Length: 66
Image 1 (cartoon, one colour):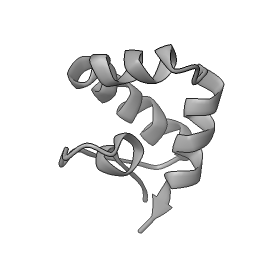
Image 2 (image 1 turned 45 degrees about the vertical axis):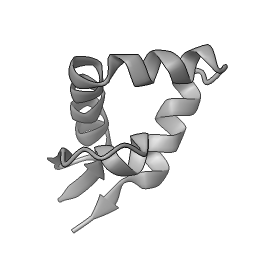
Image 3 (image 1 turned 60 degrees about the horizontal axis):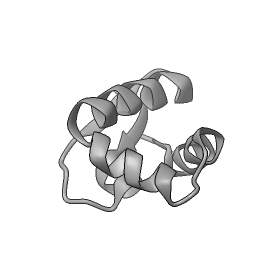
Image 4 (image 1 turned 90 degrees about the vertical axis):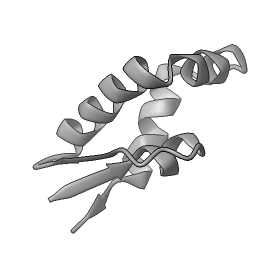
């Protein structure tokens, strides 16, 4: 099982943890959650120059297995 914590990725206090059978599954789930709940944070990161590719690379590094 793969896991990806919103708190680890965003640095904000959010209890959401994406769980799935692949890195791609949890990254997609967390992205969906982020857009729905934290769009302002995502927009701020992009305004500071972070690209979508950089965000995906960052998320990939933070995926854990349980």
